[in-house]
Length: 339
Image (cartoon, one colour):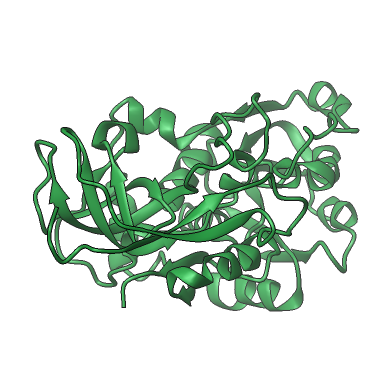
């Protein structure tokens, strides 16, 4: 271990959070880093990604797509930074990498288990691996193109449309020539979606009747990119076109504890002959998927962009996380760890 590495701060999960009270469940700890073992890599973290899916990892649920974190363990999330020490083949000091590590200044990972990958080539923005070249963009592309099969002239609705994945899904649908409906909370988000992203219709679920607004679309919604579940899913299902597709990307409405009840309008799946499919980006990564080149092309052309909601310092992780979970952000919520 380098003599310069004498301290590390990290967030520890001490209890299952109740609602949005994350400060009562996580604590910032300080340690002297332990030496690496064979196969490990130490990363000096530049940025941490705040993602809604990690909320489920904080619960005791065992039926999710990821086993829950044990109480007393380090909180886990996506990290972006430079390798500062390596005892794993294929990774050298100085490599820029992204993968699942810890909410920490120094993350220690086993590359194969962390999905660690080197980031190659020049970056227009050092945050791009969490933005237009990140997993949110890739996830949105899979959902819109592969799962929902959105085509030109069709209507695509997106929930949590001003969030990191939603804002990508809206732009991808727009670039494919679809008519896009962005469902978001608050006038600022809806204004961003219409004036910056260029969606055809923005619906403020806090102030508008979502079902009534969607009912005005002649012929119904052909595809729904769902990040939320719950009441919004119930509002969309009766307004789907026959043979429509629902791509289930997230269920943030049910991430904080007990599973959500089944959709009250599940009958519409039969009545409208809908196809509903859940998908998960780690499945694609495990299968050796390749980041779609078209996303990089669109970014270069100015047709794909990611706004960042950035906080500064490891000590402000819970502030950033609370903003993201409370819907205060537009785009990708990140924490800049390195000074």
